[in-house]
Length: 184
Picture 1 (cartoon, rainbow, N blue to C red):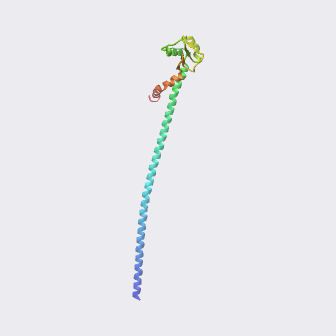
Picture 2 (picture 1 turned 90 degrees about the vertical axis):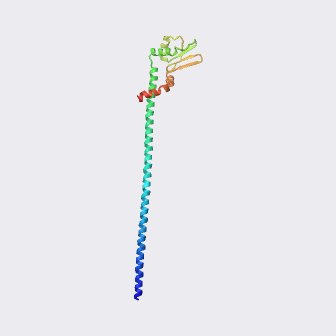
Picture 3 (picture 1 turned 120 degrees about the vertical axis):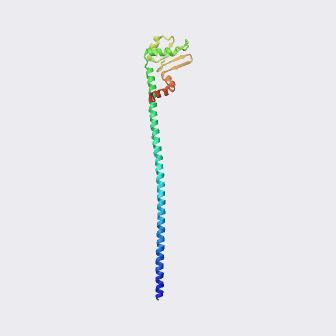
């Protein structure tokens, strides 16, 4: 029986060694798998963080760009309002010419026009008496215009209303006014 005991002991020892070896290999394999997965997880996390950083930079750049564009538009809108106000001021000043200045303006404006006997001058109510006194040699209409004057010659109406003249000339002078106000 001693041989049998020796044999059993040997089998038990071999099986314990074998199970320890298998367990050691399993633990080593588990460690490798865990290590690989940790590395993959770190790599994926880094990719996700990098992508999030790039996306946030893009979003921030777009927000800054949008804000700069909005600010520029607000500045341009304010500058346009100021330029418009300049032209409104011009109209206001023209509408408030003294009688003498107004008469001079009308005389200069119609100096090169070949007036006919049926020519009719239409002026603002406030200048009618001064125009009558200036004796342009043409009929002064009972009608009136807000500013400037209109000259009716037969079926042709010459419009010299200040707001219309300024509106026509505005595109010619708008850039010049803008440059004098904001660039000089």
